[in-house]
Image (cartoon, rainbow, N blue to C red; front, side, top):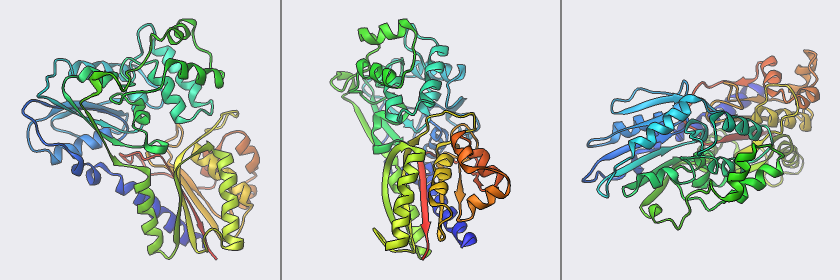
Length: 421
């Protein structure tokens, strides 16, 4: 089974990545040229590839700049590419945000702004609100990343500590037309959560951000707490008249990638079942639920008969308590392997579609029925690796890591559980 399982799992993952490539999905959503200027701005791990795809399809004059992750830049002729840090912002992130805000000054009703946004933009486009330092934002961001907070909760906080997110960039573009093209990496495809919604009106409040910080016991400086309590950091709301000339389109989503993987599975002789594109929760707990479903399939042929594949997407979380190298997808897989206890006929792949799981340049990994046995032969205790949040160390030792390099897209996590008779 092992060789066949590996091929089918990787083919499905590759199909999920391929359908979300900007060169394949962006062109149908481009607006028509206008009488005035067309300015291109953007942020995210896929933004440079989106800019290149736009240049290749656009008829007419364009200019602009986008910011992407270090190593994710691609050559463009008319759109400038800036690189900055992810997942924790750096000085380049702040400088990029300032330059993008400056670029949209002085626009008129005859102009349009095409905004290219994908996952990762929250860190890459980082401009602290007045009275907040970059160091403040870095510390809060690190605390959020290790707290177990959902991406929606993290982005609610980020929007209220920013001078550019939560609709503020769209407000700065007014009165020009704003045309958002998004690649979704968030559960539910809520546009305000993609890169913390720099050009999307925000209905959440400072009070919501404070509650999230309290819930996860994240300490913040007194002056930031005061700013949130007073409403000084409030984001731009849907009723704001500057939000009236905004149009938003998703050019790639997790669901479309799961559907592409399902087609590959069907062609390989496995009946696909998509369980959902917005599954959230603690990675190791989600894995236990998935293991239970997989075992029900194997034992009773419910809710689907093998050979089949269970597909899902979304964004799980990891509450970091150990000293390992983390990664929510490898944490999911390690917990799944422990729950399955070598059940014959079940293999699985989980990976982040941007090629980076946690802070490692590793997309994810694959488990097989012999995963636990091989680990023990090497003197590795799987339960200890899980307790130490060291999924990457575990799968590297077994040579089962999935490494893609920069994928130039990002439609969140991809999970496939392959079940044979």
